[in-house]
Amino acid sequence: MKLALHWKILIGMALGALLGYIMTSQGLAQFVKDWIAPFGTIFIRLLKMIAIPLIIASLVKGISDLEDIAKFSKIGIRTMLIYIGTTLVAISIGLVLVHIIQPGNNVTEETLTELLAENGSSASSKISNASQQMESGPLQPLVDIVPDNIFNAMSNNGLMLQVIFFVILFGICLLLVSKEQAAPLKKVFSSLNEVILKMVDLMMLYAPLGVFALMANLVADTKRPDLFIALLSYAMTVFAGLLLMIAFYILVVYLYTGRKPGFFLKGISPAQLVAFSTSSSAATLPVTMERVEEHLGVEEEITSFVCPVGATINMDGTSLYQAVAAVFICQALGVPLGFGEIIMILATALLASIGSAAVPGAGVVMLIIVLESIDFPSELLGTGIAMILAVDRPLDMVRTMVNVTGDAAVSMIVGHSSGQLHYPQARELNDYYKK
Ligand code: ASP
Image (cartoon, rainbow, N blue to C red; front, side, top):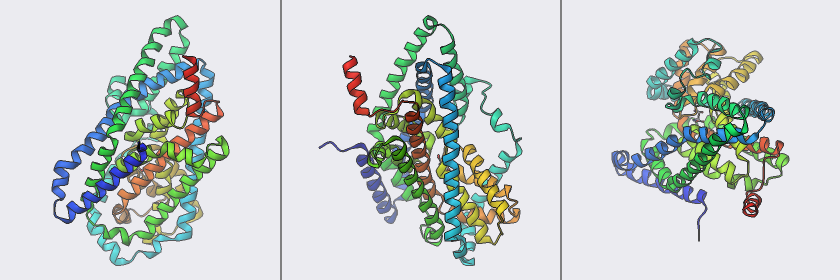
């Protein structure tokens, strides 16, 4: 019997976590680091290696297939509005939950001292990282979208938005020149795209082993699991919010496109599991795009634009977490929050999630900016951040999963509204008859 990919990945994760646990309890954590972890790093590198070429090939192909610039701008505006809408829903869910559960009221003085001793120094480095970002002007994020050297941008995975900017312009110009002039380039990009998608297919064969190694290393690397218990009600508030967010996507996709929850979840689950194992939406992007296109049935014209843009700016899980964490820290440290501050958290968590890089731990750096926007006492900032760092990694894993699910859901919605969503089986049959 052929096992579905998500089962293979899930088994890989479970076995990895088990092995990590056994090895650590036998005092062999270093063995895991030396001999198992590198296979996880190789998986992440493979995914990152393919991300920029994939964006370039599929976005050029996607835009040039549209054959109409007006259609592209309509899709662009619709995508942005829906992204902002889902992020606002996520933040609101977080804010409501954290006010109902009030996790900050359960933190004892003792736990606080322990958390500070454990994570105080790494909190300070995150704060200095955030203050560097704060020093730039308000329009700097806009300036940062435009590359000054496209080859430089293409050689840095952190500059994905710059690459997207260039490629969109390139794709639009491909539509503006005559059909004869565009034809050879269109052919090249279309063939390049096929080859790169095949590379993603091959990489997915390695995914179960990759996540096995990642999980083993993660478990071997966890220093103080007991601190998780101390922060249980905070962690559970974030988890509950993230689960609600997934339920929200399932519901919206079902109501708007008619696709059943099982179809949506089965289609996207391998990407969710890779997001969980890598904590990076950018590293997961090739998998997300493959799943959305091949298994959820969204046409490439939509996927090629909505997914890469979503991976960089649409982070619903991150924004929800930032809202909960900001209020939790204030509750625990006795900093009062009025209605004005709550609205400020809503606005800055929206911007902070857009500005968060799609890499592990980026959300916590931007959380510092959210806290500073509500004039959080600077002498308490170190304590506040140190407090949540102990549980940040598991929360990062789940919020990244939500970030990726959000991109997939929005792709389906935009796809459906533009008539570019089909059942994959129907598309295969269509292609078959065309041949
Ligand atoms: N790790 C998240 C992502 O890549 C960002 C974050 O919340 O830290 O989507």
